[in-house]
Image (cartoon, rainbow, N blue to C red; front, side):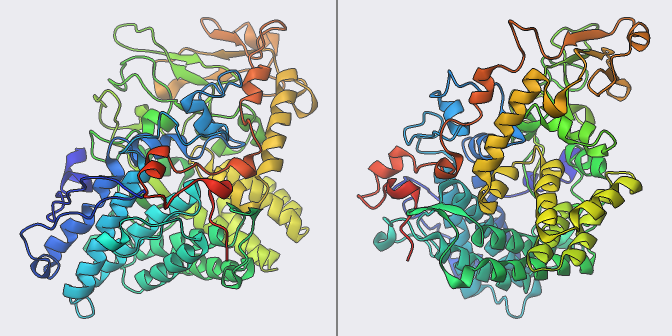
Length: 608
């Protein structure tokens, strides 16, 4: 049973009883301190651990990661979009969160308890724990307490990583709130990045490797593998492009020069790979394990945001759509976010990642004897298939929450970050050694060899290979948008996506000759699903005549009613993505900031 091993089921509420009574200056009033003295609280590991684990409460609250950040940050990209993008509906709250035209008064976000507020709540909890452990935890002599300090430093870095991705320059809070620090302005993100990189360098000296200790036997607890991988990811963001007060550009801070950041990426990723405490396995197995709440450390998953069985909307948002309460779930949900229509065709037909990642069907609303069957979705609304109710070993009964963890980092990312770093540092042949294991499990050997020849032809060729393979590997995991931003090619890639969608709609160029119709066998068993018509040449009448009882659909619609319309394609983005890739700080926090916050200058502080 899930309750036997899901960490969130035994996390205690914070003993400090954090009374986060109000929000101001984008943060919160100082929490009240409980009657239990801090010196007692943080001197004992079990009590200090409960405080640190209480930070996860800020992740799982209704409008935090659960219901606002994970559903909305990450779309739209060139591989992921919100369900049914629409230019005509460009000003709706949900559409404008996706389409690069977000306003500070957005109705989904402009509340006192949304993700922005909850992230600072989590940071405040972390700050209190860091201060308490440093002062009372005797961490220099107690290895478990030392790990705990590394863990909370890392959790704070996770939250700040997402704040910086979504909002750019934000107030820097590395000490708990006082009356003097209640109201703070935005801080140049370079300063925050440098602090986080230093924090994680400290944390990796404290934390146990995966399975080195009982604490790190679960992917719901921070381990050194993840600390190093997160430090690498932060270095990529710090050394990459971003929207700043004076434009979309790289940092001018010499400490964050791309070459220096790539050295960090190379070091951290290669140490994780060489140590071997976490290993890549089967591509499909990683996601099956995630759906089955298997949180055993040492495999592909490095760290997951833990959700209890009745919390978290991961499958609800990113999973395969079920239109009814059926044999696999008592929740008619999934498919809030979808795959951009061209993604399926970007894969080599023999790439095992394709049919796991992009799915052309849903589960039907109609039931027979309590069972639904698979039914074709449509070219404009293909689901992601990495997360499936049918892979779970428990029935979801909540209306909205499924309790599946959010996988924050996996080993394939470590390998591809290492490959990218080696290439950017001029070592393309070494870079291939880290890309190869990711491709070996996805493609036949002959096709891997062909890609080796293509990618290793030059540094730029390998760079393009990184762009492509990160899309194919991580589609549906909300990583792509931040990648495009940091690479500085988000405008080009998003424009390319629109052009590809237009060619697909008209079946010209690389899409010429795709069949008119797609067929599916209406299976009720998830292991017996068959589809015909998606690939070139799958329009053989002798085959089609044998598909008795199969459902079919005109995949591209008709001349007067096309499946991919101009409205959908134009809804992918409204304004220039690079200049609108950040969310504004929501108006509530501007209004209550004592005039310390504003959304001037592209939502960024003018850099030093």
